[in-house]
Length: 208
Image 1: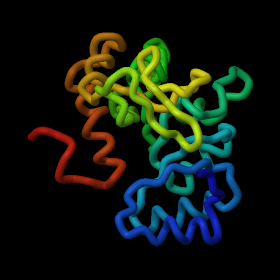
Image 2 (image 1 turned 90 degrees about the vertical axis):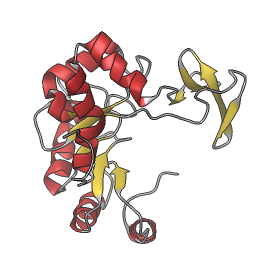
Image 3 (image 1 turned 90 degrees about the horizontal axis):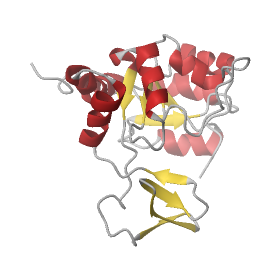
């Protein structure tokens, strides 16, 4: 369900007592005010599922957004004349770029690009894992009015559209180490330390 971040819809979201993280498109009407309001309440805001320009994404960062949801996926494409939100995510900023490191949602070479651009401190690993992971390959998952099933290394709708990954976080860490070239310690920072920091958690996310 896609709603603009203002009015009754935003009031209903903001009323959730256990709310920790919200993803929104910064170009939508009311988004910048919503980002500021949520951040003031200690709720982390990420930018994703967005057609934002480079400037709109940077305005979202200035308003307090501290993450990009699923870098490269469901975003305005990266262009050499129109960098868009991906250009903002690859550039140095307080907002970390979350990637799905399954080798399907993002090609390993593009993961390497993000890793080289942002370094271990600027990347977050997320599985985007759906309940089909580890199930019978014939199993299906309802996605709205459509159905998804495991196909070519991920959950997909009947038309091939990606509907989620089937990896574990350890799978993602392995890919970042083996295919992208990150050190094990760096992969651990991306998988645990950085997401904890986005959520303002200081009692977890690292070994001491």
